[in-house]
Length: 588
Image 1 (cartoon, rainbow, N blue to C red):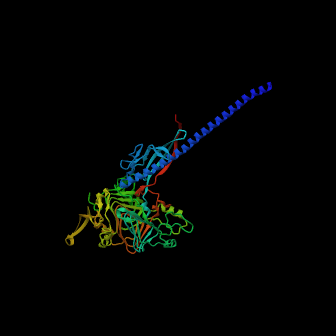
Image 2: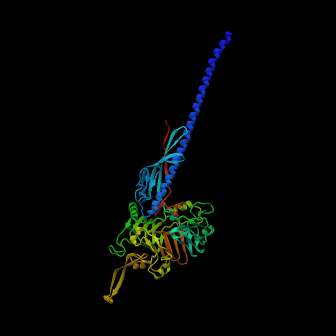
Image 3: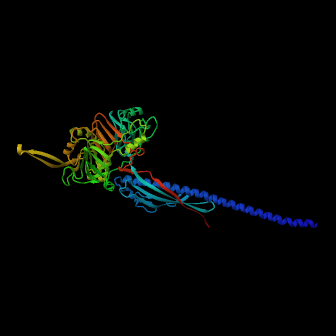
């Protein structure tokens, strides 16, 4: 009996101790599980906050881009459009009416997100490639099931830049209803119109054709009829060194993404492609001055960045003030960078160098305009890298006019009879003009009649002879008469003397203007790109539009020189990303 009582007294404490140990272990396990659940909740909510902050940054990046594009479309003539990024605050970017408001305490994927603008900088006015750099910070806050508040902060720096407009991706681009007709017309490159496009089954398009929906023109974006095209073997056999290269380059494979692939496709009902507009030329003047651009000839500087001097008539402050004649018939015209001519430009002959001429009114091509060192693309090509290298330094000329580009001798009666139907209504419909073109005679709504008087004057020299023999006297006087949209401020006499009766057979360069490209040519090759609103070109026999692939936005042969063609906004680019904050706080 005594032995049994002693064992019972020993077992009870042991059992109690075991129960205590089990309780401690169980409590520890429960704490561990609870702690793990809290940690898992924090981890899950942190990931959710990170994704919410990133989603908010992505949304704001594109929202800013869309709002800026809206502003850009409404201010096409303002080269200082990046100033839009200067009128900003922590929560807003852009001026009133086009403002992009950054989200404040909005729910994104279950988290509350606030986005702020930390810093905004932009390149100086006149930069080669305008860029605005915006740093955005997104803070996302969420709460776990356990009531723990989690916060995640991400910061991104985004570049909003400009790139050469994609209108130069085309051999022929019309910012209106387009027509590309006739058995002798051929595009060695893509063609496009911001409206319906009329073909006739006889023309040749070695590439793609595009037509866009345009409510202002009543255009449904249709391509009427079709075009012929060459097979790759036929394209190679043509041996046209100025036509763009092919893809594949030879039997060895591909190289040029924008090369001709031997097919033709019709692309209807496209979106309109925004065409840049030449407005106030002050920014181009600043660019030219900063770059030290010039036009030289035979050791003489003709233009030092900008030209606003006495015109060809020699009359101070005459109607042709700021106009210039560039005749490269005897000695080549050497261009270096973008230059600005206040008035009209009359040009022909050989051109050397790489640059662009911006004219405050019209550009007159009165004879063949040819590169001294043109680019060339062999077809087939077994050494494309070598070809690209050779073409890097080849000549490139851009001709950009606020008014028109006029081809040939417009003083000839045959010139007007050939083109009149294409530069007057109903072929040319009325359209809205920018206020900056009022100075060259364009009202807010232009009726489409380029043969009408524009309100300006032109100067003509008139030579008269009196007397006989030794008493004979020749006198030249300058008369001022009313000017038509297509006529030169320097007068018809000068145009006639420079153009003569010789038909134009070759034009090397990129032709771009706000209004029309018009005139007469012979059997002619345009080597570059033709971009305008209205086109009224009359040709004889045949005309080729050979696209210069160095203009291509996606070309390995892209030109890496300071030309400064008109630009358009490019897709935003994220240049840096970082997580700068993470917190998890248990609320009381």
